Image (cartoon, rainbow, N blue to C red; front, side, top):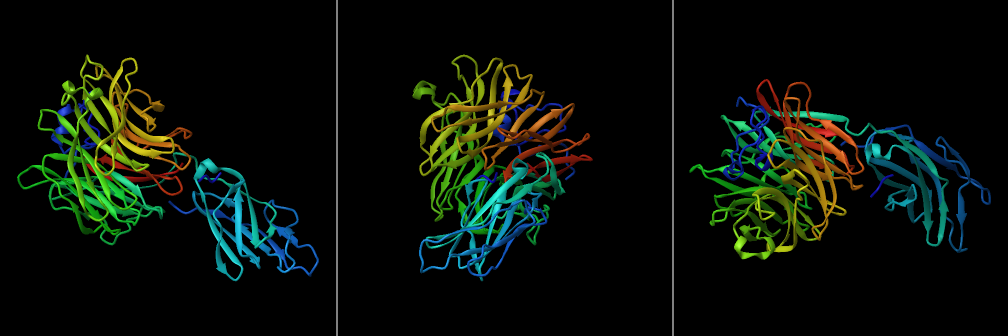
Amino acid sequence: MFRSRAVSLCMLFVLGACVDHAPSWADFVANDMTAGTGASSDGGAAETTGHASTTDEPSSAGDEPEDTTDATSTGEAGSMASDAELVPPRILAVDVPAKVHLAGPVPVTVTTEGASLVRATLDGAELEPFTDQGGGMWTAAVPCFGAIDNGAHVLEVTATLGPLSHVWPPVMFEVAAPAPGDLAWARLGPSGSTSRRVVATPEGDAIEVGSVVIDGAPRPSIRKRRGEDGAEVWAEGTIVLDSREGAVDAVALTPGGQIWVAMNVRQADSKWRPRIVLLDAEGHEMGVEMPTEAGATVRGIASDDAGGCIAVGFGASGYGDTDIKVWRMTAEGVAVVSAKGWDHVPNGDEIKQHKFDDLAFDVVIKDGVAWVAGASKGKHDDWWVETRGILVLLDLETGARLGPLAVQEATGSWRQGMYLGAAAHPDGVAVVGYGATGDGTSQRIEIAIYDASGALIWWSPEAAADVAYGTGVAVSAHGGVIAVGVVTDGETLRGVVLGRKGLTYEHKFSSGLDPSAVYGAAVDPWDQVFAVGELTSGGVRYARAAFVRQ
């Protein structure tokens, strides 16, 4: 139960209400910050019912304990004494909710006498030791991961003192959580706003980044939402991070709770420049910023175990093509590499150097290696110029290439695509993007998992549509894959949240004629999904954040 069209599709700049949903490749390179789903005029903790508690009234010496319970647990508690000098510990009561309705931490309290340690198993799986609260009270909170845990479960508790132990009869309880894909809550941002990415905090809240319109232009912004109901947490509400036009396109949390943001802003000379900045847990700048120059675009960022970051994007190589760009800063604020270029050179053939246009949209750190998801346009099969999704392994400290390059495979007429989002998976790295037919007449969301050798080990193509592309991906504690993106529903663009690989649900971000898009996803500590993007209503665009059960 509780287990640990084509080549030219523009994803983050969706032209929602427009007829042409396939900007040219140059749209990526030009870094047009203007589009969206339409025109713009400008966690909850586990809910429980009752308690399944067992109590053991103190008995006279030599008598067996007389157990009573309102759960299905029955039987006599047992003791084993192996040392005459020690008094065996006793469990007097085990208190656990009789029924759990929502994902989150499930409280368990054990009352004991003479115990030095309390442990438990849940459905046979060992849990972390209980916390001693004093006075014989021990507490623990075990995670419920929602509907995947629906059904009856068994908790077995043991108290020990040295070599002596007391084993309590099994306690039964039930999980009855909402169905996967159910919407828990949704919140709109200010008019003219959009949200690009989201991360979940260890406490189950969400950090949401994107832009908000001020004086007719988008400005980079950030906000924090409470997991329970989506209410904004910070006193300032939405915080504007730069007075210049632009947007925050990526966000990452450090182990210490600080926030790395990667934004693109328009300078006074109208040139775009990346800004990579460290914020405190309240969304304020800490004086740590990666030195950058105009001429490149940043699209993804990840934090390492020490609190440093690596960011990726793309920019001109100086040789007529576009290269992936990498920025790296340590936890001590030391800039290591800035806009370091990576160029796809198949098989190391120097004749093919600078023959491919390469873009990066996301990065994830796994096993000390940076995995970069993006796209490469060129003659992948030595014949036609096509765009394929790529997954590049780079040295975290230097940006040097490691291992083989994974290139999205052509399948039949589906010969083009991109990878636009990435997330660590127990089997490797999960990516999401789109596939397109060679003539650009049809698209589909494609989700894949690659291992460290670059081998494709799992692949899920979704239904074809005129417009369909995945923008972000998250992975559950059970290895399930949650992909988000945009598809055409009739003549309306619709944001979607898809549960795959052991998860089977689809949540639509909007209904009726209002177009929408989902750009980013994250799972909270209990596997519930934060999805962010935008919704256009009455011709006005609004950022939208949603909390989806699974």
